[in-house]
Image (cartoon, rainbow, N blue to C red; front, side, top):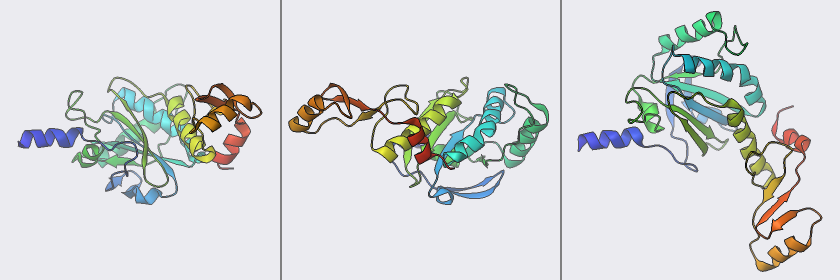
Amino acid sequence: METLATETEVTSMPRIGDEAPKFKAVTTQGDINFPDDYKGEWVILFSHPADFTPVCTSEFITFANLESKFNKANCKLVGLSIDGLYSHIAWLRTIKDKIEFNGIKNIEVKFPLIEDISMEIAKKYGMLQPGESKTQAVRAVFFIDPKGTVRAIIYYPLSLGRNFDEIYRALIAMQTADAFNVATPADWNPGDDVIVSPAGSCGVAEERMTNTDELDCKDWFFCTKKLDKDEVLKKILKS
């Protein structure tokens, strides 16, 4: 029974729509109280398998290089691995002093990197996947909104580096959906048409099919409308 409980604890994870599990942690930028310290802001909480590993190094360089871009979209970055604080510090110093990736070098990681030697936080967020590794967190990405709610989750195996264009696209798409009460179709980027919620009655459905001033309806349930890129970015991004 004890083994089964342990496995359940390791593989449990918050779901989309859940309140982000709370924790206090030591990080490379001081102590944090999560997610309370980030009220009013979006947060991307992401895990990585281990310090001083090449795929993780490429990801941290990329995230650090894009940090100001995410901050402009009202989003903070918070990293985690089950290594200790001194290992984190040594690794981030090595990144700054020695590593170049995709033409990026001398990059300083300024966002917090959580120490989680006990694996307590990784277990709360389901970052440990026993079939992949019992001792390393997989590449999890949690999007947490300004109210502290989990809005999206992306998981990658140990061998696969993350796509940062997609992480940023997802962040902007969710903020657009909230701000304009719309949905975003496949491969959406700012400036593309957005989707209007399906009609909730026969009358609305008929009206949508006959009124083409604002909506482009392929059928009663599939209607899109234009949403100007500048309007989206002005609403979402900090000036």
